Amino acid sequence: RQALQLTPDGDIYLKLGNFLAEKGRTTEAIAAYRQAIKLNPNSNRYYYYILASQLMELGNTKEALLVYRQIVKLEPDAESYNILGNFLRKLGQREEAIAAHREALKIDPKSYLAYHYLGEMMEYQEAVAIYRQASKNDSKNEVYYEHLASLSLQRGFVNEAIAAYRQLIKIEPEASRYVELGDVLMTQEKHQEAIALYRQAVAKKPTDDYYSKLSQALAQQNKLDEALAICQNVVKTGEGSYDTCSNINLPLYKQKGFPAVMAFYQPLANMIPRRKMAELYIKLGRDISYGESGDGSKQEAAAVFQEALQIDPENTDAKDALKNLIAN
Image (cartoon, rainbow, N blue to C red):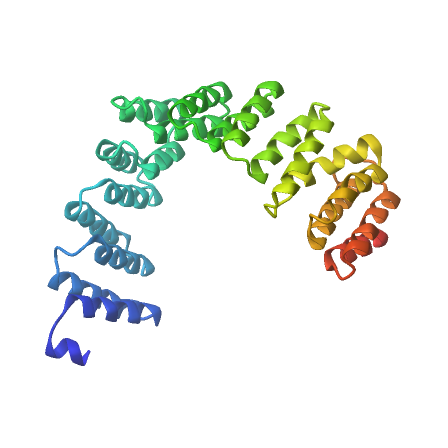
């Protein structure tokens, strides 16, 4: 305050406002922010944004809205319109909020927030019409197709989502795009096409996460040998994550029993850290007890947890799992 008396400065008033806000002295903070803006009326939107947030702390929505409108006048870009639109939405002013987000899309046809909020507020067909209007001059607008796919899935328009994901792959043939489409096709029981997409994903980016998708799909189609081979490959790459193996343990157990699981991992034991190996067994034990197997085989699950403890004797997760199994 002494510095401000000597030399009034907007940045110092801003710091004072932040200090007062942290102390819960909201009214004083608002006065400091107003003074900062008065000294720097053309400062960036941050000054106005924090003033509006403090006004909201006092429940002064009317003044806060005026400040948000001032932000748009100061910086009439997509971000400002989205900030205004989101605030209007919270106030229940739906039509004005939609208009603000539409303005954001006019300025930036790749505005993630505008697509997101419009999708939240509008009926499916209305939102899609606005999406298409915004991207009509850019057939390679990946943001449009990404939100179209996401919104279509949320609202149950699966075929439209699949079409959007196919277009995304043409625009951005990245591994993640193949996986996104593969995941949707799996829900539609189009397993072979999904597997083909997962293969393309791992060819582009051979990570445990993507191999996991492929191995799980293969196991569901009774192609267990190939799924197991993929697990072996992931272990040998030494990435340090073993979701691929974790996902095929239960199918292997169901088909051949726990001795087959142990036999499979025996030659890989030196390549998998002890704790990770124990974690694989713990997950299998839980799956046997409570998961997809449905047989509730306490004896088999107990044997799996005990094997995990043989590998990692101090593993608290294995101890707790075994204890809970016995108790239940």
